[in-house]
Image (cartoon, rainbow, N blue to C red; front, side, top):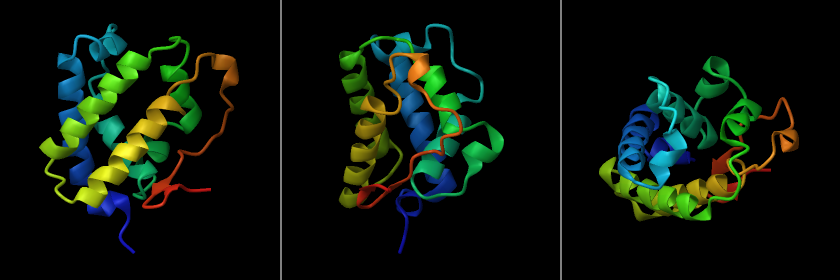
Length: 146
């Protein structure tokens, strides 16, 4: 069965999606605050690798950049920011369309994944809450894989 990663265009699709999302969040007055220190030059590639791995693609993120705990630590300690999260999700939904992902089922699953990860794994408030050695959570057509 085709993975969500494959349905979204594989590595090229993830890169288009990450670039479209990054462009939108940097232009958003609320979400861009998350990048107040600036984004790393390879942010788009890192993001594409992470999403690709999470959505059923190869382990490009963990073999190149780090594990899930390192991602969570990068996003932790910012307190509650529900408005920013909702706006980031709206930017993601727009980016899915801009990336040329036309299939409604794929769009829906991508939305559900991004909303889930935004309010769960990327929303830790304390560094002490993050366990080391975690694998990147995997998301399939049926949601979070056990």
